[in-house]
Amino acid sequence: MGKKVLVTGADGFIGSHLTQQLIHEGYEVTAFCQYNSFGTWGWVDTFSKEEKDALNVFMGDIRDPNGVRVAMKGQDTVFHLAALIAIPFSYHSPDSYVDTNIKGTLNVLQAARDLDTRRLLVTSTSEVYGTAQYVPIDEKHPYQGQSPYSATKIGADRLAESFYRSFNLPVTIVRPFNTYGPRQSARAVIPTIITQLLAGKEEIHLGSLTPTRDFNYVKDTANGFVTIAKHDNTIGRELNIATEREISIGDLANELIRQINPNAKIVCEEERMRPEKSEVNRLLGTAKRLNGLTGWKPNYTFEQGLAETIEWISRNLDSYKTDIYNV
Image 1 (cartoon, rainbow, N blue to C red):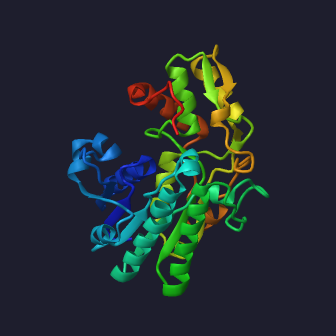
Image 2 (image 1 turned 45 degrees about the vertical axis):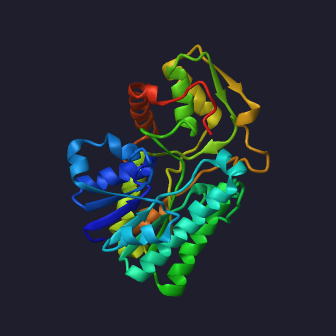
């Protein structure tokens, strides 16, 4: 995939783990981080001195086509992860999701076409499938825009497909199922449960307990991206990253309660519930296509991933707001 790589959204959860793996594998990495007046680099700020010294940081905005083009110039491979991802926030601010997820992806695609980028990986999400119509969900499953977030990701995916079909752009659509692990924000369910338990809450506030999810540990997700980029037979493909294991939110919460504070009880709050037609009730994927093309498979069990996540959050609990609903 060439030595020079760019990661958009490198300051975020998955992007920061991907950036670290690429650094450790010896690539010349540019981290595209969201510009802000505080001069912060998101999770890149937590990297070791050696990792930072090996990294080029580009501060920009994925919504700005000129900045995107400047960042991508001279790059062999681009991993496009920058996006707005919180589903509840998409209910009341859908315009920002169109601008970031659709127009931002278009900016990357246009630049890649004009700059003759060798490889481009566009990040999708299992949310594009909506509630499973059959399981395990493969890449042929129908798309369902059950939230403004998922609708914009469907739009971004189809734009990426169109650039492959229309201009032969060497793009791959990478579709992780629910990723969790160190650095994830409390807007996601696993850190929401863990942070409340570690803070000593006797009542754990959640939304619906019945939906099921297929959880990927973040280091497995990052490794999936790198593995895909190393294989040319993945160009023009849509590829799930999944474990073929599902667990309900209720069972997940009870297991974490058992491990951290057996006295805690679950309280379901109305404000944390998705609208009925928007709730994705079941996600269970298959990575059979990815495994067949590249040999990728998870390196971590769910139990190992949870243990590492609990340990990391316990050391960084002060970074979380456990008394509010994090949208």
